[in-house]
Each structure stands twice: as structure tokens, then as C-alpha cells.
Image: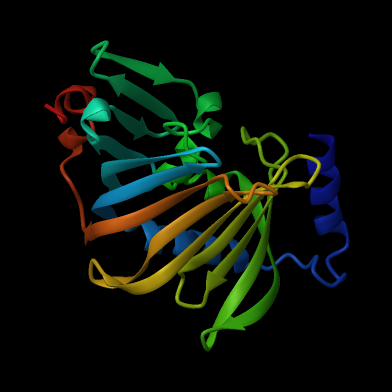
Length: 251
């Protein structure tokens, strides 16, 4: 917490220093990218590969999202995991395991925990709006990739924000596609990095169909997401995002 406050004050008090200028458009850029990548509503099917030095596991997930705060994830394969699911509404999430036939409510503090043993947290997978609301954003610089401008953004958590990260760094392309997101602990040490690739027209828009979350300093520990399909919609029925549907969607 002390490191967060000191760094945030540094950004505010010395805006003339290179790399420390608070840009009024930074938050808008992050929010616009978030909304572009998530869409108003979406339905997708994703293969998630969790890789470790001595084993690898592949899970297929069906996902529904609506707005900035609501999502439903259901495991459809392999058969032994089929029916496991999660429902996120606001800052809360419920998990369901068909073997015990019980939905368990997770507190906000659990949103930073790993989802299904992967390198993605509950927040990461849900594309949670905590990135927009719990951080102060600064444009640190720009670069060029594939002929397009890329904004490099440094994001510092607000002093009382309920987040575990001491800092985030993002690379967002001028067409709002997230290329990279790096996560740092409260001592500003890199913990993991998310990269996206294979940007192609899918679901009616340009979208990266391959995502990789890599642990810092652990070459053989990562999680890959490969989109089989994604469809963006204007809305989805609210009743889809219910505890009853969480329990019954996999049956």
C-alpha cells in the first residue's frame, strides 16, 4: 500500500518528467479498448491449455458476457469436468461443481485467485472492469507495430482499491486491440504477462484469437486461450445470468 501511494503521488506531483505525464485520454483509451475487446455482449467457445513442466491439460469453455460486469463460463469438455461453471455479477462470483451440486459464492477478495488452476485469475478471464475503475492510467509512450501506433500505458491502483497488483503495463493498438498486459506486485516486480496474437476478422471485428498468460521467469508455466469462435451481440437475456442457469446449463 505504501509503495502504491508514493508512486501515485510521484505521478501527480511531477507531471513534467518524461514518462510521468498524466494524460486525460489514457483512461478513455483503456475503457474503449476494454469495451471493444469485450463488446456489449458476446458468446464464445475457447480451448484453454494449462501447461506445466511435467503435464498439460486442455479444457473447452463456453462463455457468455454482457456489459462490463456480468459473465457466465461453463466447461463443456473434457467429460470429467463438464458442467463446472462460474457466474460473475458485479464484484461477486459463484462457482458450481455438479459433483456436489452446490453453487459457492466467492467474496471480492477471491477474484484475484486462479481460475480452474490456470494462470488467469477470475478477473482476467471475465475481463473485469476493475482495470477501468480501480486504476489511474498514464500514457508512457508510443511505438509502432505492423504499421499501427501502439500506446504504452502505465496503470497504478488507487490507494484504497481492492486489487493485488502494484502496477500494470498495457500495450494497446490504435484500433483498440490489446496486445500485451504485464502484471507487477506491490514491489513492482513482474509476476506475469498476457500477450495476444493472430489478429483476424472474427465475430464481425478484428480480434486476437490466441492469448497467452506467461509466468515471469517460468518458461514452462503458462496458459493459452485459443478461440474456436466468438460472436458479438447487442445484448443477451438477463435470465441467462442466473444461479439456476449456472446449475442447469451443463445438463
